[in-house]
Length: 219
Image 1: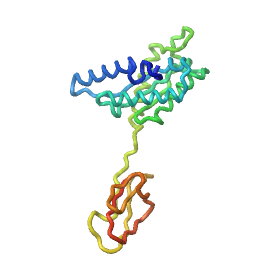
Image 2 (image 1 turned 90 degrees about the horizontal axis):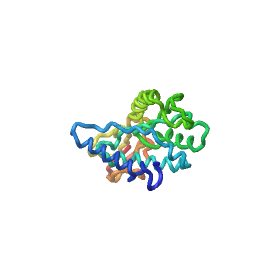
Image 3 (image 1 turned 135 degrees about the vertical axis):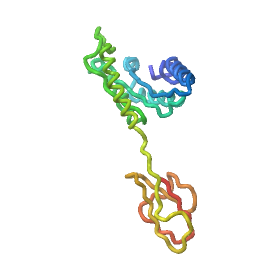
Image 4 (image 1 turned 30 degrees about the horizontal axis):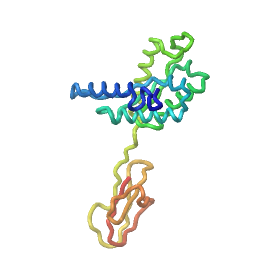
């Protein structure tokens, strides 16, 4: 379980704590070690317990944040989610809900990616819940491609805005424009020397300054 205070994979749970301990021990064993990411192929127990999609998604996100905070070098590490066995998911509402939470993770968390698991590669036995060895090898390829996708799921870096007048003192009325190379970026500004923030004036075009002012901008 990811959900609940006693969930093995919930923050503080047995599996979670063990994973953090082992990862940090590996990182500490050699200064050249790099933490490259996490593969996640779980969710069946939560599905069978009837956990809702929203509850599971919240717990999953908390776990991802926990790993990234607690493991050395993992602050922006990729987190790749592998879909549960497709035949096991099919037609079962709870299973579909947990799979949907997995699939939507990239829209909630940066540096994550989801891939469906390979169909026709379960061990059968009446449950269809586990992949065959051949299926696991296919997962290796799918997971690598998803890993590459997770690296692209990153916040947009806004290019520093440029003020048409360079830094300095000017006399008389001045008309100033502000631009950034990042398309669609929001620019805000102040004219009293204060550092601009989210509540500062939204830039919508040329600014005319006709009195003593100090212009600062942010994007």
